[in-house]
Length: 175
Image (cartoon, rainbow, N blue to C red; front, side):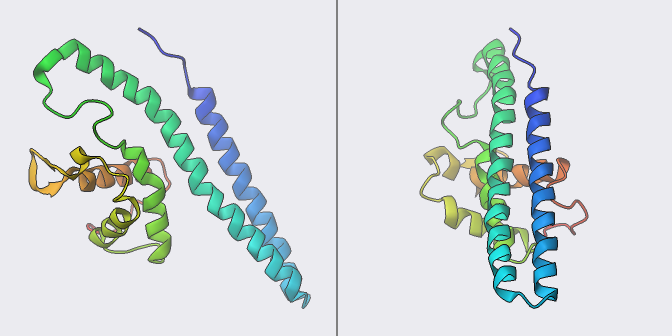
């Protein structure tokens, strides 16, 4: 079975994110000019506009990720069908998709100033999403019996975000 090529959609998301960043940079320049010229009311207004627009970027990133995960999920589902009962992990829909954690990770990083101990970020993410987690998310993985599945999902989503260039890749281990 073949699925539609989503490279055009992925490129469109990348273009939208780039254009959003350009618009924010332009507003920042306008705000800086207003501040330099002593027009503090306009500078404050532009700052509010920038903050509103910046808050939309993680939502677009999350939407992009969810779109791409649909393509990945279909491939995983096909492999599971072919291999049958060899896979002992929960089925589709029984655990929260990793991409669900993307926006909470970004929000937690903003709250802590951009960098923090990994456990602290994970704990903040948990506080944001605990009411949305599924029972299987709270169960341990066979490979990590002392840790719930959701923590592993958060780590993997962070790794994916680093690979995509959304987070820096030069953080010390555990940060």
